[in-house]
Every structure is written in C-alpha cells, then in structure tokens.
Length: 142
Image (cartoon, rainbow, N blue to C red; front, side, top):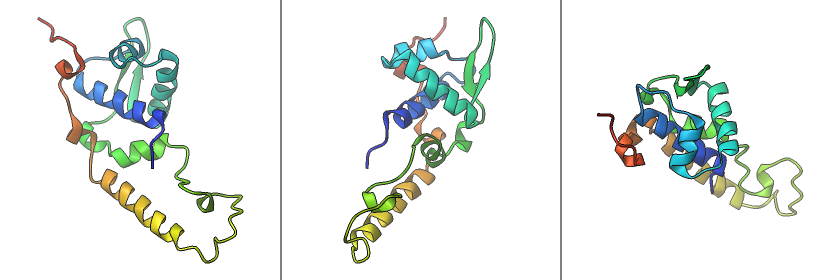
C-alpha cells in the first residue's frame, strides 16, 4: 500500500504546525520548507481545516495552527480524512469484474493487512512524532 502525496503532505503540514506550536504558519513558509507546490499545499491545508485538524486565522498576519493538541490528533484519523479510498485491489471496489472473486482468498489476506495498517496508525498521535523547529532548518528567534 502507498499513501497518496496528499496524505503525506497533510502529515508534514501537521508536523510543521506542531513544531511551531505558538506561531501561526503560512502556506508559503510551509511550501518553502518542504519544497512543495504552494497550490497543492493550499488544497491540503483547506482539507485539514475542514476536517478540524487545523484552525485558520484570517488577515494580514494570518495563517494556520493546530486546532487541537498534538496528543488528540490520531494518525489514523488524518489518513482517513485525506485518502480517497482504501481500494487495494479491484475486488475491494465497486465495479469488480474479477472472475475469481467468489473463490479467491487474497481478498481476506489483504483485508487483514489493511486492518493491521490502520490499527498501527490508530496507536500513534501527532505528539509521538513531534520535532523541533530546528529540525526544519528554522533558527530559533533571538
């Protein structure tokens, strides 16, 4: 299984916001730190805000910040909010045309693997991954 870039970037944005705990972060700054497209990050930040992980502050000196404490943000919740689906193989989705679906045992194995993946993410929160601003190449204010 592979997460989409969207989920990857969502986790990165949350890590950056958590590291800058008492400071609003901007999309421009985050894009620069990670070398990611500003336009793509805008979509990611909008989704994270709609999902309740980030809080937007409008205005000239606006930006975004975590909407809840890092220990309340489960990685599984972020992935569920940002992944379009968990259709690992054709038989997991609608429109399945596989001729062996009725007798195939692969589906059960892949369902078990997916459940284990989600269960692992369920055990961790953003707090478990916290970094310092210096880890992002940002020097502390004097």
